Image (cartoon, rainbow, N blue to C red):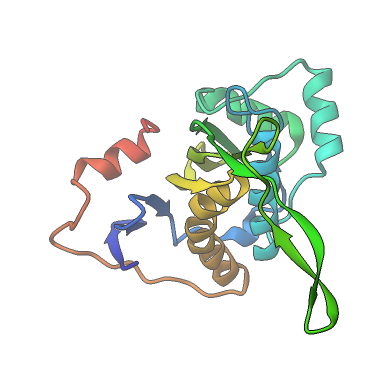
Length: 243
């Protein structure tokens, strides 16, 4: 899959054409200033229990690999429960900043997950059994198809394809600035495979920037006269928080 990299003032946007992905990472942020981050548990997709927790754990794994300090989940959930705070992707950034102050972190990561499990495939298969037969003076096991008749057919069922759509973003508490943002979708046979297919590639782009920043590398701003793949207003909508 070929990726086109689009750079604008203060923003690096990576567009993966084959996966129809939008990944936006601000490359000029000093992530050494982010001493603690709260990764809020992503709500479950409708009808799929613990699906949001599975995605949250995947995101946590990527951010920990990048070296970003994360708030302990037990402590985080206890504080949110104590203050009766609920947060989702539509929570205004002003409230997110207040939540971040309550948790004592420099940034928060929030997300949304939608998923649809397509109809499973159902079919029939003739039951078979092993029997012993004599061949060349030796007894060997072979498979024998049963004679047609009632009770000689068993049903089988396989999981159908799963379509997932996810949105995840990281917001700095003191300024309300979106540091990175991704919107991805995927369709695979198996829920976990669909999640990884949608998440892993854009998160590698995010964690690559974080790693370089934590190691002391800086990025020089680059400007392009023409945008390829994204309209000029996309950057403004991103900064305005209208996703």
